[in-house]
Amino acid sequence: MTTAHWLYVIGVLVVVATMIFRRNVVIPCVLFTFGIGWYFIGSPISGVQVVFNASLVAAKELFSIFLIIGLMVALLKALQREGSDEMIIKPMRGLMSGPLISYVVLVVATVIISLFFWPTPAAPLLGALLIPAAIAAGLPPMMAAIALALAGQGMTLAADTLIQAAPGITAGAAGVPVELITGKVTILSLIAGTIALVLAWYMNRKEISEFDAAAYQGELAATAEAEVVEGKAKDPAKGKALVWILGISMAAVIFSMFAFDIKGGDSSALLGGVAIIVISIAAMISDGIGGFDSVADYIAEGLVFAFNVMGPIIPIAGFFFLGSNDFAPAILGEGAPGFLFDVGQIIATAIPATGFFAGFGILILGAITGLDGSGFSGLPVVGTLAGAMAGGNANVAATLGSIGQLGAIWFGGGALVAWSSLVAVAGICGVSVLELVRKNLIPVLTGLFVATVIAIVFMM
Image 1 (cartoon, rainbow, N blue to C red):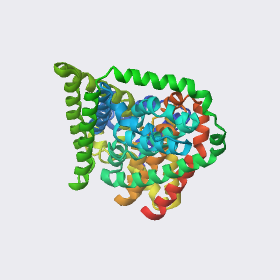
Image 2: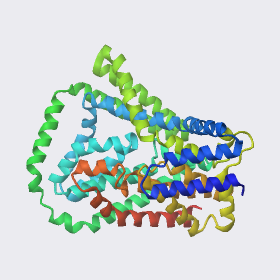
Image 3: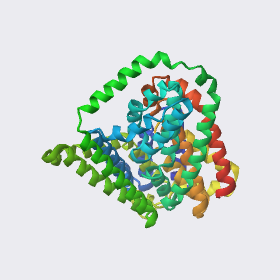
Image 4: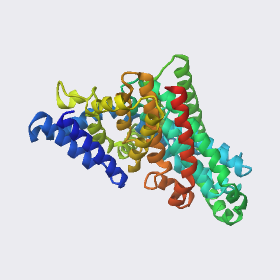
């Protein structure tokens, strides 16, 4: 271990400590990137250049992820113009005949919408259209918030099966194919999510049985009426046409992925290309000749959202990419070692990569990195360490990376960290975010524990 390696290890520890104290880790990452660059190359000017180069390498690597997120949000914005987003959800409102069915409908709707549009932009849509009906059917607001948080911010985001932003980051850092991570993390997150959702219902059944929906009826009726009036101001024919166009397009995308074995970056490219086409069609249908201008507005709004959510990850990823054999030479120059990879190799000699200690160790590390409230900033950490510990075994690296991704996103993505997007879910449902965290804690920890055991026993 060289001095530069020790400097990198100290940097990682400082970053983790910063996360524990609930502060953003951009400044520590920038400072240690500068320090390592200065020491390794030999001049402070080079250190400054390394700060930029690290961010540039990270931006190049992550831009496809930024783009697909932005395009899916832009697609949602385009659909909102004629109320097509409401038409997609409204049929589910009639299914809500009781608390349990309402809970299940909320879970299913959250998963479906979050798969294509991500949980954060999907939450307001679900909150406006489904939650009032669910509460009227006897589902307490807290249980509605739990359904949105566990199904969307936790299970669906941790897997990120279609957009593949999270698996892409983890796989890139671990040096394994993204489809290998996607397959494993989807299964594990589904296991964790199913357990958490069932356990949450069971633990709160007394509160559910005692809930009196009558107190909410007046407000709910006013909200529902407002939604209907707003919908009448739009063109229903155009809205229905866009729903059909979207449905056919997405069905064609899913069919093509399975029929032609389209995976990884190719599947993201297919989804993104279809999104751009549908956005353009939606703009022309809604605005006519004005669509030439509005399509640019939709895409701009989507990209602004993507960079607001993902932008801070660039300098963070830049620092952790210094730890990777694949990216360090592009940042520091030819011959640069992958610092975290080398440290991981040393750790791997002392810790069996396929044991319970390694599995739960990387789960805890992922959870710690998620404490910053992002969930995504820790993915380069767990991915790089997973690749290093696996010693060239892609299957083990993918399993460890998937476990770490579960920890990072289930905690920081919006299920267990009160200062994350969980605040938005709590606000939409009108409940205390701290109480929501408390309600989620045991179900989520139980689900993650079982999923990690299964991964260690059956997937390595």
